[in-house]
Image 1 (tube, rainbow, N blue to C red):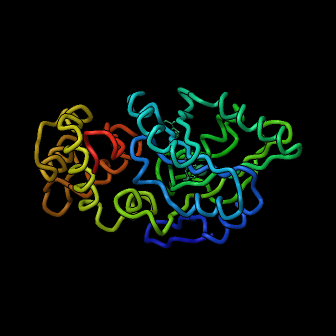
Image 2 (cartoon, rainbow, N blue to C red; image 1 turned 90 degrees about the horizontal axis):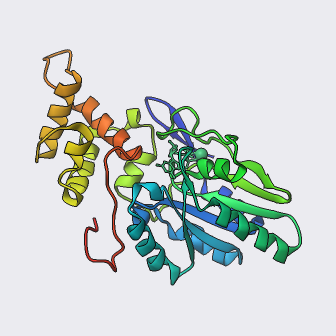
Length: 279
Ligand SMILES: Nc1nc2c(ncn2[C@@H]2O[C@H](COP(=O)(O)OP(=O)(O)OP(=O)(O)O)[C@@H](O)[C@H]2O)c(=O)[nH]1
Ligand SMILES: [Mg+2]
């Protein structure tokens, strides 16, 4: 397990060698991304390892409740030419696509005529453990809203979801071929991000380009400039630096990062094949 050391806490991430070992022994390999930004979260690594070992590969577009159904369908169409892709929603409030997924596992088990192992991979916080809980219909795997916060997955755990069908939960993985904002906000606890203001400004720029009203809808703040948004949010919440009583934009930046992760800030991308917003 890879340990990311920071002033705040230690976060455990899955190592490439661990992933390769699990894939070598699995029958089905699932890579989980979020439907709101699949290309920002998808790695070629999982898919190519699955191919190398001759395993079935399924791309899961999770959190489809955060995206209009038509956009989810466009993404599925986009990926379908390359490999199997399915859309899911596995939050405790709403579940979509689980019955179909269980059916796929049962068919594969029948074909194999033996015990089936399904491995689940993805960047931190895409919903790997929540997917296992939905498959089990029971909160067995610990989950949490933010990277490194209590309940995030620290070890490799095997869960029985149906007779003879086992799913392997893994800690978040940071693939070397995935870069940018999603990695910056997922590879460490929000409290440990070195320059939260720079990260939050990038998030705001991306979100405001996509939907000019996203900030107003989330916070009832009417500002066009991302730095003004941070200042106004800090003032609204009463966050001031002790030293000079100026708005604490570091605290506001961390709130923005958390609200991007938890979906309060409404945002989604479109496939490159569809006209519209692509960051
Ligand atoms: N809106 C929405 N939220 C979801 C969905 N699936 C998971 N979540 C939320 O996303 C957050 C992360 O879920 P986890 O299951 O802990 O994610 P994980 O990939 O196991 O995270 P790590 O173990 O830290 O790598 C939690 O707050 C979940 O409630 C979904 O389909 N829709
Ligand atoms: Mg987990």
